[in-house]
Length: 336
Image 1 (cartoon, rainbow, N blue to C red):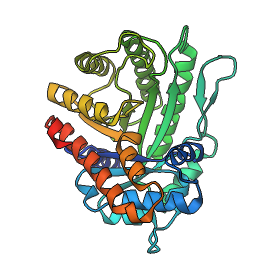
Image 2: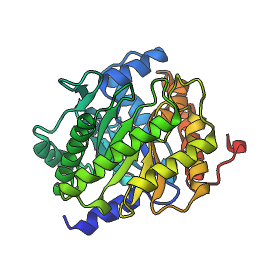
Image 3: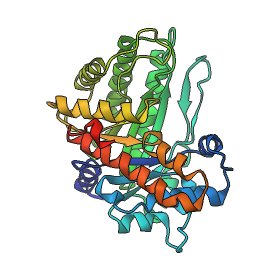
Image 4: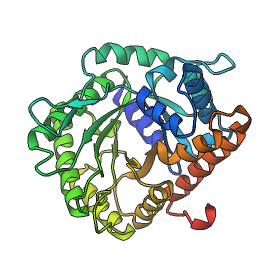
């Protein structure tokens, strides 16, 4: 595939007013979320729920792409259409999570490394044949006393870069996701320090592995105080720390930054995205790739009941609409 094709797809994924729906929860994660609303995680329940999300009328006005799990990419809707084909028909790019989860990093207590590089070239070729247009790989970075180490950061960055290079080789746009977790008592300044460390290492590795920067997207956490921090950061602090962090580390060639919600409430994720776009003056599109922050109201409304599907879809569309407005810096509380 020509490099311009990767860039064109990346730009469409961060088109003004649109973001990405993350519906790529692994088996254990979706089981946990289903359990919270009294639903048993079966093959059919997962299929029905994801069909509900992805067939929401009007979703394509606010959502440019959907990240799927391997199971979903291979499933069919109730009408017999594959999920990638159904999404493509709506003008929504099908994406696929390709990593195989974070595992303990041997020799480095408290740190993890994401696995899944073995056989990835072959899997990417198959995913492309199944209709995927972009990919995602997530590294998980915990903030603690003495962690992450430089070695832990470098190893995760190298894996992200290898994933990105292989994805581009297969003609797929990589979404590179180094997530610095907000779990813990750390202050906002410490979260910024670790996020900057991680992003510096990621873009160094991407350059060294000859990854085309204008043909990828960065999915990253906002800079936040830890969940157990005694002095939580205000919205203005979050915005300025996040802007400063990105401006120090992310090359202007990258088409867009997709924020993950990372433990924020639905409203906080929208409010912070709105404030960042109001602030402006950055070289990238500032977009969203939310999972729980888009899905939570829909999942609660559905709760496994087919007769509540329309209500669930309305809840999803509402959150997508609010985040679309936030992309223009035009979100208001009255929209809720």
